[in-house]
Length: 124
Image (cartoon, rainbow, N blue to C red):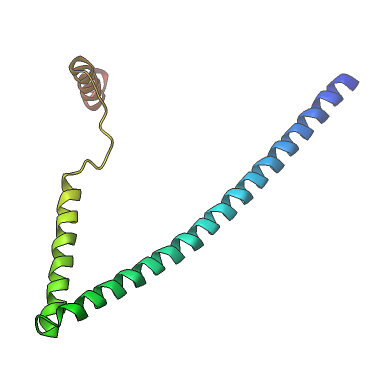
């Protein structure tokens, strides 16, 4: 009986230690994610402000050669074209990883999935 009690006590201690370790890992992961979000958000804001300043500077430079409205419209058109190309390219990019499946494996998978969709003869 004493041996059984020691086994139960050791199991409980092990589970308690394991739960404490998991709690610490979750706490550390959450702190790391929060830190990454703060620095990432700050970096994104700084980049956006820098990009905006650069575009205004380019627009002001272009006003030497064309009217101001045309200069900033040109910058807008360039951004629209770049965004459109990126969106168009993302449509052609695969959204899910493609598996390299041999033709015979593909036929086997397709036939298995077809059998799964067909009603069973017993149910008819």
